[in-house]
Image 1 (tube, rainbow, N blue to C red):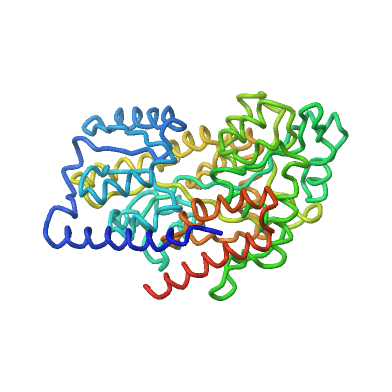
Image 2: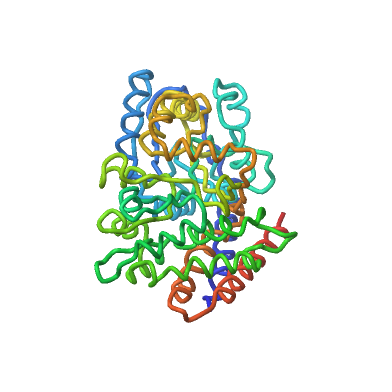
Length: 441
């Protein structure tokens, strides 16, 4: 049901990259970069170019005002291209930035290729040392497997959110989708296919697996991605949850959802009479831009009963990495410190609608004025909340959960395979990747 060469090709490619990197390190004394004078020009790659360009330009302007001897060259890289762009620069042996936006979804890949400097010593001597959220720091550390070194300064985290149209719920006399019963009841009640009205819109195209995992673990309540060395993806409770989720397709969703990526899914939600959408905090701005304040609300993922305990899968932690090849590391670190400071981290996360890494931001007024973000923060830090840590440390994680599985998810939506077959196939790939990773440690 999948292209069997995908993982093998990835392993071979990774091996070649590591070989090239090792050879370069032995032949050249320049690959480790240099500390520099703490002045001059640095290059910064934004890993979500376009969507976050404006806010990063604001932060860069503020930084250059405070550090007139440092110039920051901004390069916006679309989020879909950033990992391949980093890989190409590493394999080419040049062209990497001094500082780059780095998500834990591909951090392990960069670390395996020796592209980033560890930041523990710099952070220990920084004013940031006591300001960054411990759980985000731990998430970044655990991404590279050993959990001992920090290769990125976290700036924000995301969380699965159930967005819903408060006006449509009120008109239909429906309770907010705080429980799974309320959710499925509303999905059916708000669907009127003859009038192009739907209770839900889902992501069947690119990026579909992340949201499927959100919906599966939030329903099943399974508290770990692994049971020993085997994944819980195909646990019977997760399979049952998956069946309920994909059962919405075509019954309470548009059929066009089969090919929807993020952009199309959000456009469906904001452009028509659709009651609910599951995404994360990152789409908050799209909803308010389309409807204004108060028409769309975002809730943490539903629970089995009112006031029940939440289960979330971990979302990637975004951060800033210092690239090993930089010849101006002192200036690059100054920029990282500045961007992660209270004031700048607050400005960035208010713009992005995400959970800030700098704990001093938590009491800033905008948090209370953005109910979905406040609810996400409260749920994330609730002692009864369970976070299922996804194995971003696996070199094949992105390949497996994207090209290796997305076509099968579409087959599942079309009824060509069962939820059990889908989950078993995904589990087989993950178990193989985990076994290989354990062997190479």
